[in-house]
Length: 274
Image 1 (spheres, one colour):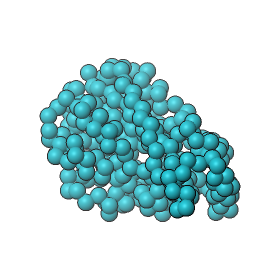
Image 2 (cartoon, rainbow, N blue to C red):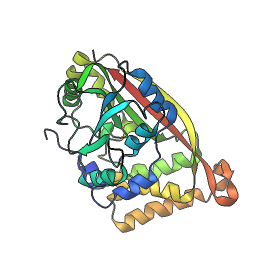
Image 3 (cartoon, rainbow, N blue to C red):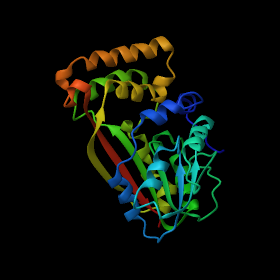
Image 4 (cartoon, one colour):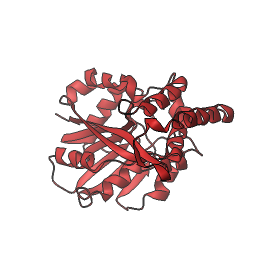
């Protein structure tokens, strides 16, 4: 494979951490999945390549969505982590989907095969945006699209989320997180500009039900938290618990059951091949 996988992602998403990731991370919003389908001009059935497919969270959501259930011919999932591929294979039973080793710029998919390339919660890990853009263009049919999608906690709509992010950020050094925007350099690379139209950006706000355990599990599913020594990871949990003691900062769905609003955003970027 021509590009290395980022060391934090490789270690943090290695064997032994992926069942937690699959359980803790939220799935993808119906309206975002519908928007991706509406952006594809080609008729069904469609060939889909999903790069950085992880444990299959996005794959399962896509194949179950009413706009997609009868639209997919084949889905080739590409994932560099053997541990994540293992969880993907165990949890994704739809026979149209298969998972393979690969990276952003080395997918082994045949030329001009795909109507859609989708990357969910992963493109910020890309080590070479130009090489990736060239690979995307090689794999896509004319007029095919790349969809980059992220689900992210919204720190601007809840004080406690902002406080939690302050805790996480102590350990993010060297990790190319989405919020840094490094991945936006893709749009100015020669490989992108030669092959793709300007990207379309969409953002949706929503809330999910949250509990103390959900917050802790999502924190521990982050690659840079998973890499911490047990004592340091427990300190993160203790700090999060301290934040969550201040119940006045939460919008409660059912306070007796400890269920509160967990504000999220979905970011979706659509790039069409020329």
